[in-house]
Image (cartoon, rainbow, N blue to C red):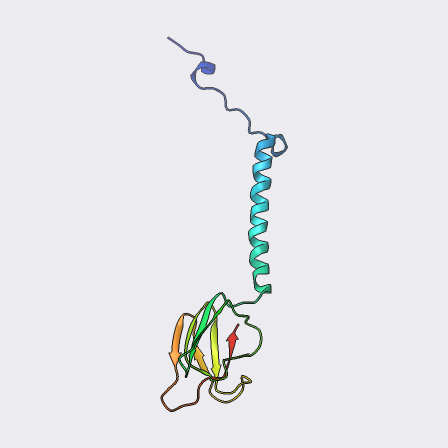
Length: 133
């Protein structure tokens, strides 16, 4: 028994051209492209605020704890007048601690992101800090 070729397998249909796509497919493509652009735009603009995401905290000689949420990475920041004796850098940015109130002087203490440090006994407290960005 012989069977005609047309009955064995259906002939492949030609793929539609991009302009012949249904409206729902074009809409999904446009939404995906828009979402991708939004993600890229948000990432590019996130540095504009320039804050150290997280919490920077320190304690003073009087055992007062100071917590700062998402501090600015710009400029020099002063500690409380008593100075800082212990620092917890729970931000995503590294910090430098200084013994002077104007972020100057020799040998600043470098404290990486997510780490802490304290002053050595009988030394001056830290009086200011800057973020490394």
